[in-house]
Figure (cartoon, rainbow, N blue to C red):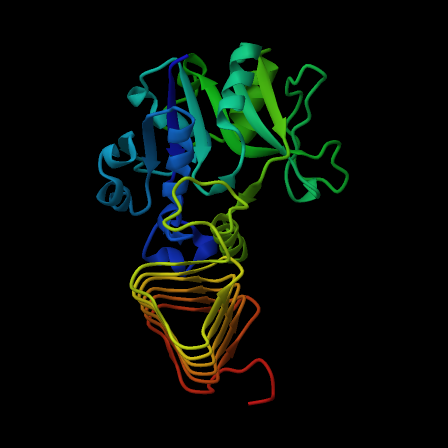
Amino acid sequence: MSVDAVLLVGGKGTRLRPLTLSAPKPMLPTAGVPFLTHMLSRIRAAGITHVVLGTSYKAEVFEEHFGDGSHLGLDLEYVVEEVPLGTGGGIRNVADRLRGDTAMIFNGDILSGVDLGAVLNTHREADADVTLHLVKVEDPRRFGCVPTDADGRVTAFLEKTDNPPTDQINAGCYVFRRSVLESIPAGREVSVERETFPGLLASGARVQGHVDASYWLDLGTPAAFVQGSADLARGIAPSAALPKPAGEAIVLDGAVLREGAAVTGGATIGAGCQLGVDARVDGAVVFDGAVIGAGAVVERSVIGAHARIGDGAVVRDAVIGDGAVVGANCELRDGVRVWPGVQLPDGGVRFSADA
């Protein structure tokens, strides 16, 4: 079975703004490297070498960074989506670049620990038209769910409900028989969940489920992005692309930590960053060149490139844009987002009365 990989990386990442104002979501530094690097390393480890990237938003950034992929042992191609085509349309849009009889499709914002070889084996053994990775989750009410029968065949695609009949959800990884992929209508928006998959079921096609309870996380929100980066850094989520050994922290070359500075919880400190005396960074992602002042506390947050966090400031569960300045003794919490270049004066923003 000759397999191509297709990565759908065209989204604007609006839920992650302001981080995605300067870079597409899959290119955001995650445990020290662009998130897409982790995905590509997993694809390569599964023995797939030809990868087609379906791009749209800031499309040029991908090729500028990865080139032809040869340094990763991959053969990368790029297809730009000129108008939004949805998941199904995006898949169909790359059809002319495929070389084999099977295509493995990945949503570009999913961090997963699934055994890709096992998914391909399920597809092969079932002689399926399409195989879906289905992951079991504790609370399926937040998702549409996908029931299967005793033979693992998908029986329905159900919308969100308060009483889901199964804990299995669509995990955003699919294997398509090439002929089935080419039957998706070209040149228009198509949803695989609402049109392609239900249509295949109605026609009697073999739609198979590969069900497991592996690590799975949609990185679409700042909180999930921070968690995913920390899980990669600590080795909880698998990757062969970590720039440093997995552990409590990843500190990239050129970063300077002053006396008493502590980095824990799977935090990543980017290249050229500076942490002041007794600064504490826990479970956060600090992009290249940022400065964290003396005694500052940064927890479960993202600090943009070259941003500055003043002495004694507290940043919890927040997003600070590139080049922003958070003045000394500010207190930012609970989902607040500071746009790039914004400057907050010393003590200018507090969430509590004790200054």
